[in-house]
Length: 445
Image (tube, rainbow, N blue to C red; front, side):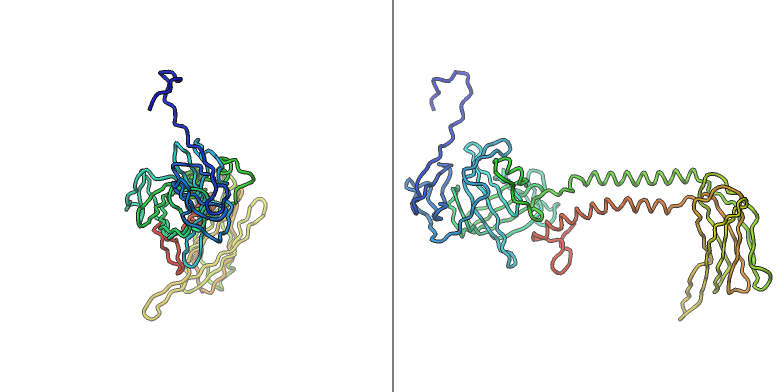
């Protein structure tokens, strides 16, 4: 190669000029064709008659022709230029492939992009989900740590998603191989959202490509397309879960709230009195005097807080009900409540059994300080009843802690449910659904 005599001696070498597009007429129908990657394309598909022409033949002879053909309109017209990752690419080819799985047909579109210095790229579109793909820089290796069928590529683990035989059903534009409808290849997909590894297997070769999920809005902006992209349906095979990046934040927030709840519980436990203000044992004999008794007055001090009233009895195969009233000595106002106990035991078929409890308790919330007494009226089927009354002031309750933890769990549980549901919908389209038709779990996670 000779140097440019007009260029300064110290100037950097110029990039070779990109090949110029060629315009010709289709050998089958005479329609005009444009070859946008001369020297790189091996075949050109006519959009008018469906003929596939040999791009390497000077006369562009017909490789294959089709009398009937359904015309499909690409979402990105051939010849459109756009920028992907800062590089300009031109759409030069369009094809549609389909697979048949369990009697259902699934079709997707593929757009071939070309840059004379960067080579070829692909844009794949299925149900509004787009993937930008290029040839892999190496051959992935098996990755036993990633699960059954997983592979490793550039330090990342990709899980096996699906294997199926794909058939080309429509072609338009030019391609770097001798494309034709009816062409079949075995396609295997491995995913590590938002990336995907695909392997196309033919009797002649095995080709690996790597792609990344791209939003339709980005594609429309990159190629300056009018209108809006088709709305995505369902979950894309390599679509990044909207919950993936939020998972760690949600975990740390949940842990922070749980720690805060325990700290608050510890604080209230430390500042609570948790003090016994009254305790006494009583005996009641049925038929001897009035069953009602009044306790000696006792003081409830400190801030407005709860009172725990506990009753321990001696009932055995008997029951007892206690009508109770906590009465303010100064105002005469009372808090009426009742507790019931019952304990039964026996032997049946050589095995002992018990039922019920001899003891019970009740919390009275937010009782102001003051001087009080308790009025007790027992009812029982026992001829004699012994019971002990104990009153405690300002008792910390762990129930509040569990109630707060339950409320705090609602948001993260809902988050993890939505995250799992997203992945469930993704993997239902794979060879490894989370739940098969029989309802068993096929997923290792």
